[in-house]
Image 1 (cartoon, rainbow, N blue to C red):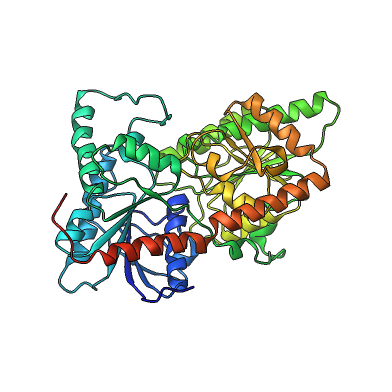
Image 2: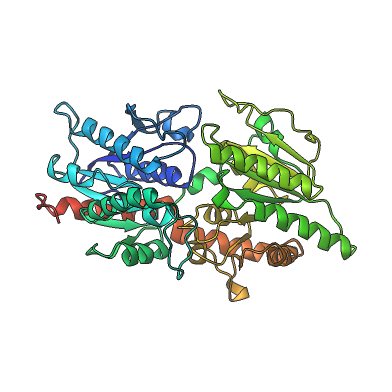
Length: 458
């Protein structure tokens, strides 16, 4: 039911590209609009050729405020320039001629919060994806004390950045988190925050996954196949560990061959790819090298509808029926086609200690079994046991362990697969629909507005 009082809400997000955080922002904004609120999104980067369709087709009002600062200098000082870019965005929001809002919704970077509250005299809701101070030291493993990496200069550089993150985060009127895992870690490592973050799970637009697939669309034809398929959806970043999917796929094929149950299989690795980012480029080439080392054929493709397709140099690829298809910057239609295809047997979600992870939820919405790591957010979205309630498999990230789980998945009978599909769809609808997320965020926004005049800094 729409809110009784429509709110004017401004979202701030640093880079409105293609990724889980961006998907959350887009769906949250759409959900709030559907509930009668007025929403504007402000960002320091928005490339119409590398973004979600709703941000450039008129569904949402996006304000791209181009900053005078780069993202980094020679690959260094990312967080420093991220703060600088957000402060530039904040100045734009606080200029005398800027529109007035009832409340701000800030995510990822908290730098702007005290300025929006005190200079803008407006309440702020902060959505925490994960503390940056923990990401700066490499992969975070819960229960393992993080160690400072790098030399003295890096440590001296990080200390004020970490202090700034904590001191500004605690200025938020309401703090939300994307999972119990993130809420717990945030409360433990940002110790001066007086409130425990409230969990609002990312939601997805379920209807977008139920839309009819145009089988004549060249982009759809390029990625669909009658060959039994395993799918992995993640950005091409090293930390997403897509290599685990390739190694597990190769181990599964070896198990099937040794058991005389060999059958054709293929793996589709699909995700956001930004040629500006060195990590994306190096990850793609490392995955190609791994594929070749395991004697698997591969093909790299981008949507033909893309206005600026990624230039792919000759790589000795196999166009027809490759073992591994690497799909860069997939479209919404391609994602829906892959997840709704009867040939898709499972989604492989490879990141460990993921803060939430929207991929498993996308798969469950479509009734696709999930194989994910047994840590972080997927332990809240995916049910592994008891078997009669299972929506997926949670396993330690080791190729041989995953290959065993995949063997179970590809060997499932039709009745068992159908029952799991029904359970997965029901769980996704109940907990992770866009309306559930929009209601949770709406409640937080209304709570913040009801606090009245902003108090002094805390």
